[in-house]
Length: 371
Ligand code: SF4
Ligand code: FES
Image (cartoon, rainbow, N blue to C red; front, side):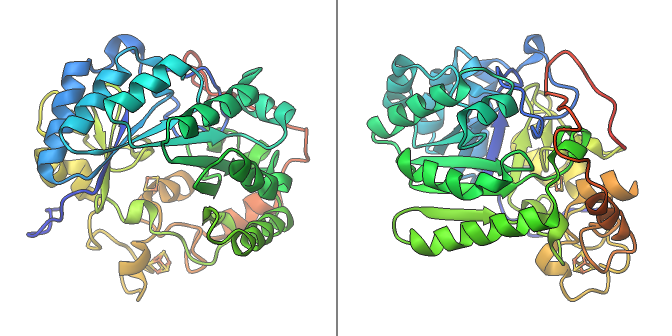
């Protein structure tokens, strides 16, 4: 499939600077097979990639991981992003951000910090992260961010263990001085799919959380921006995952593979190009993986003749792959999908609370997929 004749530039680049991370969140968006440290791109290559991104029209650099502060050259990379004119957003667990590191990041030109929290309850938060003392550390890091005068966004991923405290997590974000909080219900692929039986809340729990967050949105209007990503297993239509495949953003893995989304490697047969061999502009325009599901030509029915196909682009390709075995199918979240019963079956058969232990995300072990 070919790229459209007039291709818009990507808006953002998500750079997974490393897969190393002290936390082990069981819903991590990194792949099951994590890239080892010895194969990570060096700082010079990352700097070239960010220069190419800026030249290609990219506006936002999201520095992510793993935990990006696990890299000793993080400040050098941030300084380069600022130099080439990218708006630089650090997505962090907070672990590894000392007062000295925060001061150097701010001085280097960092624009924004997104800090993840696992729960509003400290004991539960540390259990979810698989890291004792993480909750207390995050509170300190939030203070460092706001103390440096940088805008803070708090990221809260919702699942069964914290769904009853979705509202408390919004209140915590306000107490931490965040200008924005992103409340996102877990997306089920990769590590989250492995842990789905332990993570999936009931429909009633998810609905109560949605209503509480919406109530707080009205209550705190003008005080904090609440971005609310509702759980797609409970929706009638899917979301336009990534704003549509290869339409807005690209991801670069620690070893330089360029992906249309963080889970794209779960789709067999896609050919990913690497920044070591191609420029970012070449990859965006011509990489086989980017062109595989660009636009709507690749669609099967019911998407092909659906009036919503330019709105949601058939939903998530990775979810279609995970649940139907075919990435060209409609996302089974869609009630029009012939595979929608797979969602109903998962919702109708949750394990009881406490019955299932997490398989924490770790570098060394690659668990078998749950399905
Ligand atoms: Fe979206 Fe396809 Fe469902 Fe139509 S049939 S709403 S395009 S997923
Ligand atoms: Fe890959 Fe949705 S996560 S398309």
